[in-house]
Every structure is written in C-alpha cells, then in structure tokens.
Image (tube, rainbow, N blue to C red; front, side, top):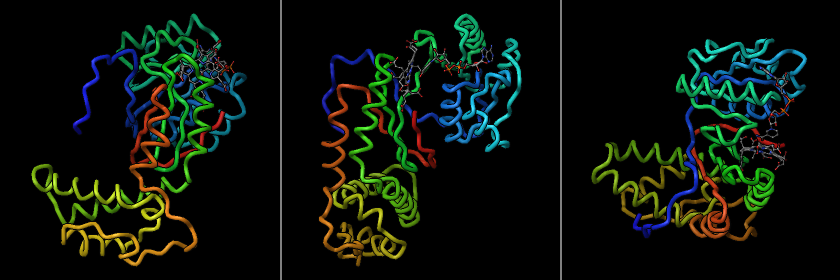
Length: 284
Ligand SMILES: C[C@@]1(CC(=O)O)c2cc3[nH]c(cc4nc(cc5[nH]c(cc(n2)[C@H]1CCC(=O)O)[C@@](C)(CC(=O)O)[C@@H]5CCC(=O)O)C(CC(=O)O)=C4CCC(=O)O)c(CCC(=O)O)c3CC(=O)O
Ligand SMILES: NC(=O)C1=CN([C@@H]2O[C@H](COP(=O)(O)OP(=O)(O)OC[C@H]3O[C@@H](n4cnc5c(N)ncnc54)[C@H](O)[C@@H]3O)[C@@H](O)[C@H]2O)C=CC1
C-alpha cells in the first residue's frame, strides 16, 4: 500500500480482467487463430458471433461451433459492412486479408467498438497474451506485441512453477471472504479495514495447500476461534490434516508468490488476474 512511486512509468499497456459475461463479441474469420479467440471468449461467458465462409472454417473452430450452439452463432459468409457491428461490444478479426482487416478496424473505430486485428498490432485497441488458467486464477503474459512466441515460452515456465492447487485455494479463500461478510457486514469503513487486515494476515500465514484443504467446518472454526477473537489460528490448530503427513510444509503464499512468480516476470509485463471464472486450458 505504501510502495514507492516510480518516476519513469509509461510504455506499457493496461492489464485488466475484462468482464464480458452476456456481452456480444464478433469474430471475423474462422481459421486457427480465430479458434483461439473463440476459446478465449468462451471462458468469459460472452455471446459469440462468427463470420466466415464454410470452406475457411478450421476443424477446431468447427468443433467449438458444434459444442457450444447456445453460445456461438455462426454465419457462413464474409463480413458485409458496418451493420455487422450493431450491438457488438468487442470485435476480433483473424482473417488472411490485411486490407479488409484494416477496413473493419476503421469501421469499429467509427462505431467506438474496441477491436483487435490479429494481423495489425499497430491498430489494435488491445492485445491477446499467453494465458495460464486454473479456475479463478488467471495469469496473462504479454510482451506488448514484441515477442509473442516468447510469451508462450514464459507461460510454460510459469506453469512449471505452480503446484496445480492454486485454483482450489483461491476458490476456498473466496468462500471464506463471503462468510466473513456474514459475520462482519458493511461496506468499507472500520469494518472493511478490520476484515482486510485479518484476511491479509491469514493469507500471509497459511500456505496454498492449507487453503485448498480448508473445509466448511474449518471455515466456521476460523470465524469463531479466529475472527471473533481477533487472531489467526494455524491450519493444524483448526484440526486441518494433510493427506500425507510427510509432505513438507509449503512456503507461505506471500513468499512463494513474490519470489517465484512476480519478481522474475518484471522484465516482461505479466498480469496476475483473479476473478470468479472457470477455465479452459489453452494451448497453441
Ligand atoms: C500483437 C499480437 C496481437 C494479438 O494477437 O492480440 C500478436 C501479433 C502477431 N503474432 C504473430 C505470430 C505469432 N503469434 C504467436 C503466438 C501467439 N500470439 C499471441 C499474441 C499476439 N500476437 C499479440 C501480442 C502478444 C504479446 O505481446 O506477447 C499469443 C501470445 C496469444 C494469442 O494469440 O492468443 C500467442 C501465444 C499463446 C500461447 O501459446 O499460449 C506465434 C508463436 C506460436 O504460434 O507458437 C507466432 C509466430 C512467431 C512469431 O512471429 O513471433 C504475428 C505474425 C507475424 C508475421 O506475420 O511475421 C502477429 C502480427 C504481427 O506481429 O504483425
Ligand atoms: N495474433 C496472432 O497470434 C497471430 C496472427 N496471425 C495472423 O492472423 C490472421 C489469421 O491467421 P490464420 O487463422 O492462421 O489464417 P487462416 O487462413 O487459417 O484463416 C483466415 C480465415 O479468414 C477467413 N476470411 C477471410 N476474409 C474474410 C472476411 N472478409 N470475412 C470473414 N472471413 C474471412 C478465411 O475464410 C479464412 O478461413 C492472419 O492474418 C495471420 O497473419 C497469425 C499467427 C498468429
């Protein structure tokens, strides 16, 4: 909260977890790149419209169209003109026709619809990045348009540094935070400050596996023996047991995250984006 102010900020892009649930996303093109756009957008629960002549639809795009008939409307034709943009909240072009892609971007600009053109980075409102997902855990790696293949390789390194239990741990912490609001309702103010202080202390103290193993009984005990008494009991004190008692205790979250994930990625722009979404694994 009191980190120093960097006097040299600039030259990057905003890393955000864009909420697209029930919004309309137009994807122009149906090839391999389009299939990856479809996958990325399906994760968000948006409605998808795909425009692409039948003979240009890749097997992977076709599979998504078949598997998600309620979420994807597919039209066997080329992009026709500005009317295609009506009611669209986002447009993605992934076509093998650079001039047409440029025209679509210009139409989107006029209609003030955010647009990504897979073949024209200079005109994109935003870029895609490599993604690591585990339920609510969402990590995006971006090289700001400079080295997409390096994004993919850095993704593999990050995947290798995760235990596979982070998503479950985050889900449990989400449940605990909801329960905490039952015990201590209200927005902001002294209640908010007290909740935040307690949650921060607990997250710094417990490790990822402990959160992943936390059950409803432990959550209730945490409230009664922890929150109510203004302390943060250990996992073991609440009766928590690891399936294998020989397992060595993992590093608490604060050290593992700051040293193994956040710091090494400083030379690139890495976004750690957490929200309540379920995932599709991404591969290229
Ligand atoms: C600017 C951006 C716009 C955007 O797409 O939003 C963009 C642009 C372009 N990519 C091109 C090529 C390749 N792209 C990849 C791979 C990925 N590209 C992705 C994103 C982005 N690509 C955005 C910036 C991302 C960032 O800054 O990091 C990833 C991360 C995510 C995703 O696509 O969803 C995904 C990896 C995902 C994963 O594996 O997890 C590979 C490697 C491979 O296939 O393995 C190659 C071949 C090698 C190479 O060229 O480097 C070309 C053609 C260049 C040409 O014609 O020569 C352009 C256009 C141009 O640069 O002009
Ligand atoms: N951003 C990225 O990560 C990458 C971007 N690219 C670029 O992305 C673009 C697409 O690549 P791929 O999927 O491999 O190409 P692709 O050739 O497999 O697919 C392009 C599709 O667009 C369709 N199409 C062409 N004009 C159209 C129009 N006016 N309306 C609707 N559909 C139309 C074609 O029928 C074809 O199916 C290319 O321009 C390529 O240079 C390529 C690799 C990676």
